Length: 457
Ligand code: BES
Ligand code: ZN
Image (cartoon, rainbow, N blue to C red; front, side, top):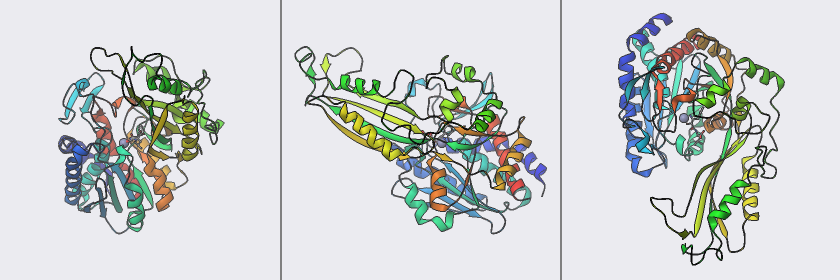
């Protein structure tokens, strides 16, 4: 079967493909905010219709949260399950965007053309690379290659509450020979990658209460305990002076990176200074004595994602607040046990509470790290196909982000995952002005066409 004709079709059709992506990007499918529930539903409908136009039997599948989209095509040949998520992160702070986040456009930048808009990179632009590869294939050959199932989720950015029950209830239908997950990045502009290590994630929110009402800080200050001060001490105590996390037992299950992997990473020539300089930084702030790549791919972290208490609005208010809160997340590696860490973290927080203070904990999810098995021959096939498309050989890399579905595919469906994506570190995912390079979109579509061709040869 001719691959060249499919690749040419992709090149010819890029503008229309971009327009189709824009239709999806215009739907503000923010999963975490109930105000956008109808939009999540609309995004799912849009995808069902698009998949049907390619010959998939596709349907929107209800869950207690946002719907899943599932589609199937073909009976014979290798069976792949393609996963992406159609939900996006909230857009705030809106004033930092230089255009409406849901009015996408191609913009010229010094580094080339980019598609600007929320979800352009995470993950609508990425999932459409696969859909567009299917479209070009179908246009050239009249059918789709092999056996393809599609699985789009609408709750990834809000902790996937419906995912496990859905996988359990539909295990037979969803199990394939291998899953293809398109929600990760390139190693750099020219080097494609298959991500084989993902960090786990534990989310905790703590609410500390002192006095039973907000007080005048002149009348009560000095005599009354201030929960913001208590919270600040707790947070300050989470790291020691060398950047290590102090929660007891935290490093159980964290192994040193094997020399062989370390050597592979060295050979990638990661530009740590450039990585930091891109975001206005110059000094790595993780554990002493570790490389930047190790810090983000192979070491666990504890970060404060949000903090609130008292008056932080315009002007000034001499308040002694009743309450202080923080959202704290831990990225996990190796065999670190999220539930154990949660328990030890909570015990630490309780041990730091002075008299008259109480704490409430809210659970924001817990999942372990995962390492992909790379012995399936599909890995070598895909690595070769990617290397044919991009200027440099494809690399096996780690990722600092978390994609819990890969672990669930293994656990619930017994299926390995290949994580292939075309995002860049400077795509500003989850931030204002998110973008996806037009080159990522274009070469991403071509990459999937090559991979599908190679898997079916
Ligand atoms: N696509 C990202 C994960 C990612 C980020 C992969 C950077 C590679 C590089 C995904 O949508 C995401 O943001 N996941 C969340 C986890 C989820 C449980 C909220 C994350 O990593 O914070
Ligand atoms: Zn994502």
